[in-house]
Length: 353
Image (tube, rainbow, N blue to C red; front, side, top):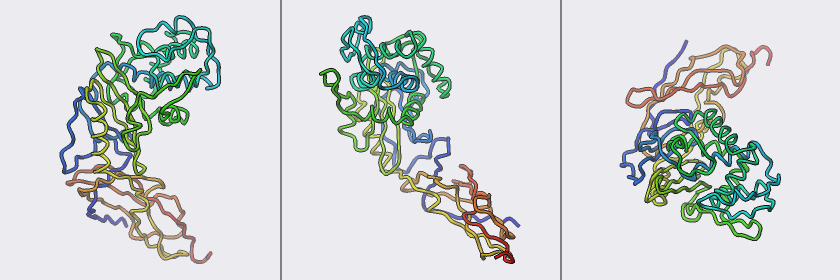
């Protein structure tokens, strides 16, 4: 016999598995100067968006994909000889010296800290044999990641007609990059010395935004100021992207402060537990809980209903990990999402005990 229990919570529970935008808190969301912007949780759910799927120029934030493709196809200790053509690329530079050997890691530091277009071309040609072949790898990776609003024409981000992305795609890309430990170490580096030159990270948020763990800047006259950043406070990881934003530093700080003031990360397994009676078993009841490490974002105000579907009782044996029932979250009668409930312990038949 299945029992359905409805309970009213004083907190809004939004599963990280939820892909639809999170519902707004009571306080009005902040305004931003960007033409396009998005603030994503680690699962890809949206806390804030403005023209998030519009096709935009992305300038040197392109180098996030360049770094990711290099890291997945080279070893950081491999040596790369800088060529004269690498040193002649226009725009920002780490000032490579033709004929000198650099490690892939040193070039990646020049790419991500100093936003070196010279480093981007050197890495591209070394990794794939030619710039064109490397760009093909970039677009293949974009396709594999589901970045349907993205296309690359070069590894550095200088303006090109068919070189574009969206704020949402760039945020998804950053989340993928953060899964790579080497990238995390590089993007969080504030300064590094390469061949006697000090490279300073252009990402000022590392110094002025609490919890910032990395990101990438970008700028051209056509693209405007572009910024991708990541921040983690209280275990809650967020990624923010602003494209064509004259006030990007303040907008990122404002969005992070707003989000962390209204949301926090909790472990659902520690919050919810239900008992199911056991007939003819070694214990009178077993617990039904969400799957391990099912984490949730809890707005600091708001409310939600949840519906629990569990049997009134079960006969032994009961095996830990087996499905017990279903937990459904609702707001205003509308279902948000559902997750399974699992037995957290076993119960053997009483005669065997």
